[in-house]
Length: 359
Image 1 (cartoon, helix red, strand yellow):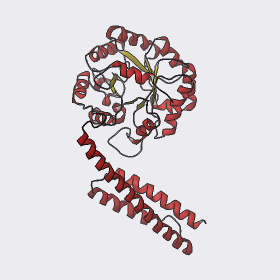
Image 2 (cartoon, helix red, strand yellow):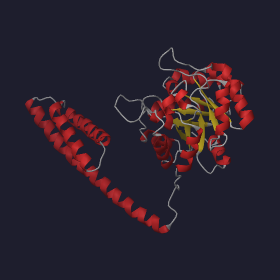
Image 3 (cartoon, helix red, strand yellow):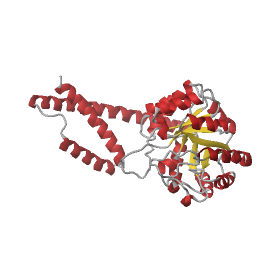
Image 4 (spheres, rainbow, N blue to C red):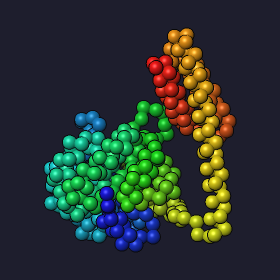
C-alpha cells in the first residue's frame, strides 16, 4: 500500500517539531471553541481538533452538538488559519464533514472495530483527497486495524494515517488504555510510509502522564501527537481529567526531546554495531535454551502419557509463574513482561505435550 500524500504533506509543512493536533474533547459552544483555538494559535499546534459527534459508552451523557458545531470549526479556520479535524462515525457524518470543508477526518476506536461501519464511511468519501486518520480498535487486534485502513485505500482514499490511542484491558494499570507499543510498531513495519499519530490523552486518561507517553511516542519515531486541550479542563463536558490547558501544551512541547533518527558519528556507529552483535549472540543463546527446555517438556509429556495424566497442572504452573515474577523483579524486569513471556512459553509447552499425548 503506497501512502505518500499525507507523508508528503507532513514533509512540506517544514515543521521543526512533530505534527501537533490539539483542541477540546468536545465542541461545547462557539465561544469555547474559538477561545481554545485562539490560545492554541500561539502554540506548536497546527491542527485544531474537536469532538462534534461524541459516541459515549452510555446514553444520558453529553453526545456532542452535532452538525451545528461544524460552522464553529469553519470560523476557527478563518480566524486562526489552523486546519480542522473531527471524528466521524457513519456515512452521514462523513458527508457533512466534507460539506463543511473539514480538513482531517478521523475514525474512532469504536468505529474501527466494525468493518460494516468502516466500509460505509469509505464508500461515502470514495476518492476524497482529505486526510483520513484511523484510530486503533478498542482491543489489541492489528489485523482489524490494518483492515480498516485497507478499506479506505481500496476506495481511493490514499491520504491516510493512523492514530494510536492504546487498547482496552481489564488489567489494573496506570493507563486508561494500555499502549502496547509493539502493535503500532508492527503496523509501521507493514506500512513504512504510513504516518502514525500518538494520542497520549486517551492512553493516559489523565493529564499527569501525557508528557511521558508523548516522549515515548517521539522516541519511537511517531510522526505526531493528538493532545486534548481545553481552557478550563476541570469544567469540560467530557473527559475532563485527560485535558490540559494550552499553556501546559506549550510547556510539554518545550520539554519534549526529538531524537535523531540515526547515529551520525563513525565512532558511535562502530560501538552500536558491536552492541548489536552481542544482542544477536544473546538472542541465539536464548533460542537454544528455549529449544532445550522444550526437549525436557516433551520428556514430561511422554511421562504424562504413560501415566494417563492431564497436560495442565495448574498448581505447578502458578508456582512457576509466581517464582519467575519474583526472580524477574530481582533482575530489573517488569511483572508485565515476565507474565507475557512465561505465558507464551507455557502455551508452547502445552502444544508440545498435546501432540505427544494425543499422538
